[in-house]
Image 1 (cartoon, helix red, strand yellow):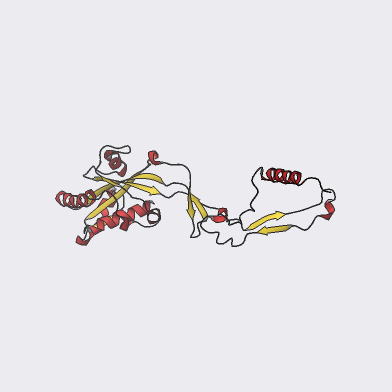
Image 2 (tube, rainbow, N blue to C red):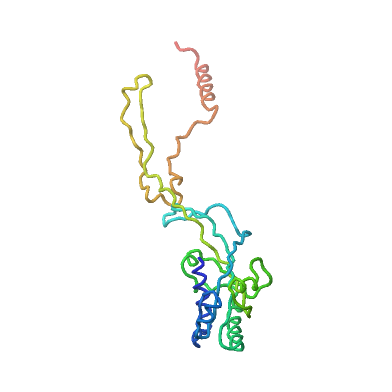
Length: 250
């Protein structure tokens, strides 16, 4: 995920036209030894802090489906991380450095979200927005002075670039659907030695269960019409009354 954010930031700065004027764009730490070896105007984008945004952490899983609507995998929600870069310009004159920093700041300040066309790898698969914050206020993490002290160099003008990046959750493959039916085994109530061979029920058309799967409604014939309650008693009473009117049989 980190290297994909690096590539997105590189493409974003490249589109602004910085590299067309002969400026190098690197992700190296701007140490004193590195500064002594450079031989061209350079923009350094140094990643110095990585912290998880725990307020965005979620639990549970999300199902993935194939073209038939069957569950093929389950994935945990993505986790979000703050990636903080130290952006500096390096030339032989401070005025030229400030000019380069102005161009970088102009490019980054007009972008609130890393454009989707610059996404690669898992960023494309997740399809989530990647927010960008430039020269923000005080935040948790290392200060610029601490970073320069760790690098062994002198403090100079720099831009803090913060990218909120998602990391894809863990994917666990789901078990394949059941294609064999139940095993039916019959035996006598007393003599178990006369048990019939096992029979296995199978589903027809298991590869295409339809939109509603095996729980789909089946068409069944309507049951035979039943006589209304009390109708039999009434007919029996009518037959008895008719017999009485006819009199005894001689």
